[in-house]
Amino acid sequence: MGDDHAMQTEAACSILTIDLTAVTDNWRLLRDRAAPAACAAVVKADAYGLGIDPVAPALADAGCTLFFVATLDEGLRLRGLLPQVEVAVLGGLLPGTAPIFLRDRLIPVLNDLGQVERWRAETAKAGQAAPAILHVDTGMNRLGLDPQETEKLAADPALLEGIEITYVMTHMACPDEPSHPLNAAQLTRFRVALASLPGAKGSLAASSAIFLGPDYHFDLVRPGAALYGVNPTPGAPNPMRQAVRLEGRVLQVRHVDRGEGVGYGATRRCDKPSKIATVATGYADGYLRALSNRGVARIAGHEVPMIGRVSMDLLTFDVTDLPEGLVYPGGLMELLGEGYTPDDAARDAGTIGYEILTSLGSRYARHYIGAGA
Ligand SMILES: *Cc1c(COP(=O)(O)O)cnc(C)c1O
Image (cartoon, rainbow, N blue to C red):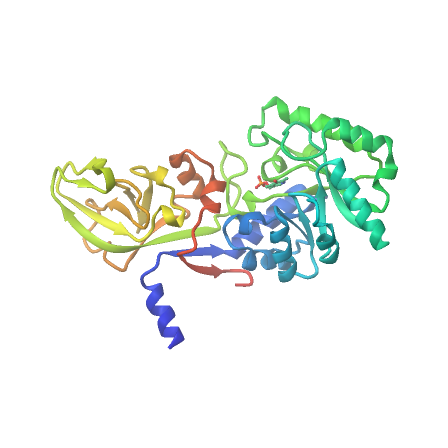
C-alpha cells in the first residue's frame, strides 16, 4: 500500500538525482590538491541544496572530520546527524547562544572582540577550555575582526585565555578571478595577522582559492561549491564531477499553430506549426524565472530550447524538431546534468551555479545514488 502510493506519486513528479559518490570524489580531489593542508567540507544551506542528511554522512565516511555550517540551527542539525565530527558555525557567537555551543560541542567562528569575550566568559564559567576559530577580515568587509581588533588581540593574549584557537581563518573576495589584485593583498594581510597570533594555524581557501596554488592553502581549506560540482575555475575546464541531475516530467505534448504564443505574456510566438512539451517544474521548484526563453533541456542526446516564460509549476519546450515518439506524457527530459550543468543554467540566468543549486526545490522526488545511499 505504502509502496504503491510512492510509486504512483513518483510517476507524476520531476526527479532530482544526487550522486553522493560524485560529492565524495570531489572532496578527495580537493583534499589531494590541498595536501598537506587538511580539507574540511562546507555544508551550509542544506549542503548547497543537495541535502545535508545524506551528504554530510557520506563525506564523513570519505574521511572528512571538520564541517562548516552557516547558522547555529544548521550546527545542531549536523550534530544530531554526526555526533563525532567537528562542527564550526560561520555566523558566529550571538548573545545568548554560548551555552548551546558548549553543550553541543559546536565550534564558534568568532567574528569580533565581543564574541571573543563572550566565549572566554563562557569557558571560564564552565571551568574548561573550549575550541574556537578566529575569523580575521582581510578585505572582504563582511565578517571577521577588523585590523584594529586583530592588533588589540595580538597585543593582549589574555583576551584569549581559556579559548583554544584551532584555526585563524579569513575569506577571500575574488578567488575566482586569479589575476585580481585583491588576492595577493588578502594573502599578505592574512600572513601578517597570522604572524601576530603566534602558534595559530591558518585557513584561507574556499573552493576557488584552492586552485590559486599552495601559497593559498595554509593548514586547512574549506571548499563548498566545488564539492557539489560547481566549477571553481571559471573560464577553464571544470575539474569537478557533476553531482546533480534534474529530470522534468512531461505532462502534455501539444500541437500549436503558426503564429500562436506560448505561456504567460505570449512572449514567444511559434514561427511554424510546432510541438510543445509542457514539463512539471517551475520557479516554485527553484527553476529560475530568469531562464524564461533561455533554458535548455536534453533528451536522448538532443538539445531542446525552452519557449515562453517559466511558470510557477510548468516549463514549455519546443520539441518540434525531435524524432517522433521521443517525448510523451509521463516521460522525462533532462533539465540539469552533464549536458546542461548548474553553471550553464547560471550563465543563461545571469547568476552563479551556487544559486542554481541552493534554489533546488522540495517538490522533486529526490533519489540519492552512490556512496552510502
Ligand atoms: C561559504 C563559505 C565557504 C565555502 O565557499 P565556496 O566558494 O562554496 O567553496 C568557505 N568559507 C566561508 C567563510 C564561507 O562563507
